[in-house]
Amino acid sequence: MIPAIILKYERSRNVIDLRIDREQDEAAHRQVYRQLRAAILSGRLAAGARLPSSRTLAATAGVARVTIDRAVEQLAAEGFVVSRVGAGTYVTDALATGGEAGRESLFRPALTAWGERTLALHQPGEPPGDGPRPEIDFGFGRSFAGGFPYDVWRRLLGRYLSTDDAMLSRYGSAAGFYPLRQAIADYLGRARGVRCAAEDVVIVSGAQQAIDILARLLLAPGDEVLVETPGYRDAFALFRLHQARLVGLPVDDYGLPADRLRGERARLVFVTPSHQFPRGGTMPLARRLALLAWARRRAAVIIEDDYDGDLRYEGGSLAALQGLDEDGRVVYLGTFSKVLFPALRLGYLVLPRALNAPFVQAKDLVDRGAPTLTQAAVADFLAEGHFERHLRHLRHLYGEKRQALIQALDANLGDRVRYSPVAAGLHVMLFAETGVDEARLVREAAARGVRVYAGAPYHLEQPAPPSILLGFSGLEEEEIVEGVRRLAEAWP
Image (cartoon, rainbow, N blue to C red; front, top):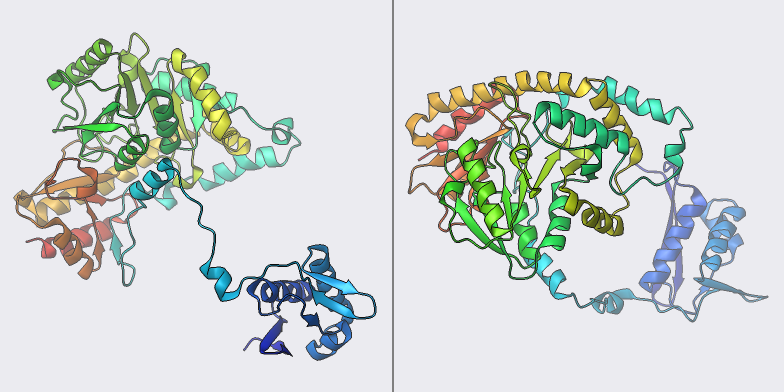
């Protein structure tokens, strides 16, 4: 039971209750102020209503008179009440209060065409669904909390918090913290074959921001964008928001079939060559060269989204498409979310020199830059070798989880499903036999306490081939095995 003193103040048909909660951390005068303010705004205390004297309120509420005085002084300072000498304190006559009528007439500004498209295209994250939380959730793109070296991270953050470093007292560059840009350039050149200097690297808050700014810079309404299908649905939504026309090219086990490109007139190509999202597969050299040659003929820009290229479990990381680019038409997009943790919200681009200044100037107008403290800690994490040690640990940890998933799929579903054999990433996309009802399968799995994710939203072709996505990074091996067993029970 919360001990509270309730004060009722009646004026005409209005009843105002003040509750002073002794167990709250909020000061008593702030509780009085907040509740009186709410009563005025809602119309329960109408314009011109007289407040009881502070002495009466204090005596009735069981608080000191100074508590009431401080609350009323704050209301007066904000214009909610006025004091009249010898007459008391009143709700200001000039205040337009709401009540039910006010709520019915809330202003609804007219949205621009862009705003209306945003509403129409809004695609929230995977819905949690109704009912209880599932026992086993095959959500994808998640990091495994137990695998991150938090002690190292806290030490790196503390290094800057315990000093009076001047960098904390000023805004950072829109392009990003230079030591982090240098560390990224060094790592990408060494591990991924990316050809760049620190000046070519720009720090962003994630892939969405990068794609949005690139679309603003490069696309006019009606321009074609060549994309993979199935593909990254959030990128689809952003390109559509900018009124681009999507041209989907179905992928196979080797990613985008660039050798089949002929008369497409796309100004922009969005591709995931190292590990196709979400189907899986890796684009071979011949297709990469064919894509670059096609882009050269069409004067097109290629966005290479390397969202999880470091997470390969057989052999080392593959060289990036960008490293083959001879004339500056590939934008390389990377992220720390999969290897470090999603809440970090840091990504990066390697931009061709011709796009660097326009991109940074555009970014400076819409975003002053990522937090410098976080960038400094990530820079040290990279430069001191923690990143690559952590990456080796994740490759072992996630590699075992993926192997557990593959073995469970083979044992329980066998020939009823197809999936990419490439051992990489944090999820597996299962393709079912034609005729399987994808939505029903998701529901049947949920009824058994297992959440799986429909593949249809990632396909542009309709009807989409039945498929589901299974993420494994956030589950223990025992949960993976049990989840697949239950999924097999739901499979037709």
